[in-house]
Figure 1 (tube, rainbow, N blue to C red):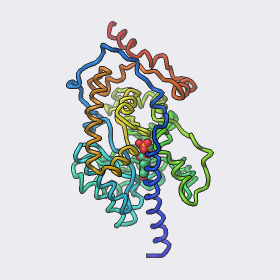
Figure 2: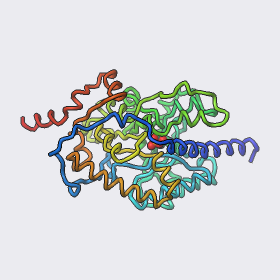
Figure 3: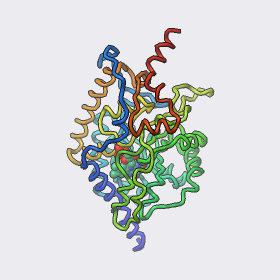
Figure 4: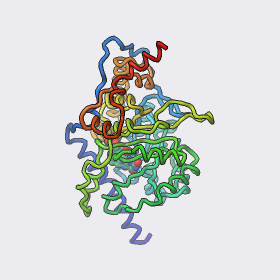
Length: 380
Ligand SMILES: Cc1cc2nc3c(=O)[nH]c(=O)nc-3n(C[C@H](O)[C@H](O)[C@H](O)COP(=O)(O)O)c2cc1C
């Protein structure tokens, strides 16, 4: 092994561990107001149902997931992060939660690092597992990552804000869209394109439609903040001037183009695109809010990471069980037996989220009267 490659390896490993350490430090800072706090439901006291009638199962294209939330892509590749993946995978196997790993680039070049990812399959042989790579990798890399993990899907992250602030990041994004198109065409399993906490805009989602992407996770701002993480790392160029850059998950969901939000089947019989959401999800109420805004399932990274760091896999199993019970209770309160019934809730968009919606020409009054529209339609 050349000394250069061992230096590169060491710096990649320290980056992975830095990400976990700095993301965890953000989790312990206490409550921050986010766009989730700016969304409220109009309360209808006689519209509820029984939790016994609630079915938390969600259909996403040809996939069926037992809960409307999943472990989002985080880590792998070092000793510390292999243990985190192992703990997450044990909890995912126990609860049936779908799970993604972090970027597998390191695993493609280094057999030792690969073990920090394959441990997920060892602990969870039958579960739904997603691999993860960054835009800019080749179609062949995508195939190898899927094979290495026995992945059911491949998350492909697009993270230009993080790359801009990352000391060793790329600043040339000019080939990402065409590269992504090649990966989507060649990948043996579905590709889920995701951000890492800065959001996918209406225009970006339309571009993804154009290159045949069927699954997207808007992964918006308000949770784990990769701009701060990169700024806080040693040797970083200071990009703190970009603080607040990007859109939240709820803003992205409200702004998404119709082909990503309307539950219809397309002419060719292929079910329509599947919009996922993540970024700053702290509790089941946030999950339900994202579902009510059109997400088909909700990804959680920082909150679940902190749980396994503090309480191990058993702690995460307990948390997931509590979230399942509480999500059912919230569905019942809102009169929803299935997550798709949440499109009948009346939404009040206030504060920053409301301002975003108004500036983008989203009809906030219609959002607050969705029940009326449905009752009128049922009377016709
Ligand atoms: C420690 C850590 C590492 C991450 N690494 C990756 C990664 O390798 N690939 C990726 O797509 N997203 C990665 N993410 C981003 C998450 O998947 C998610 O998009 C983002 O953290 C926002 O969700 P959260 O607020 O629930 O943490 C990482 C998140 C954390 C906390």
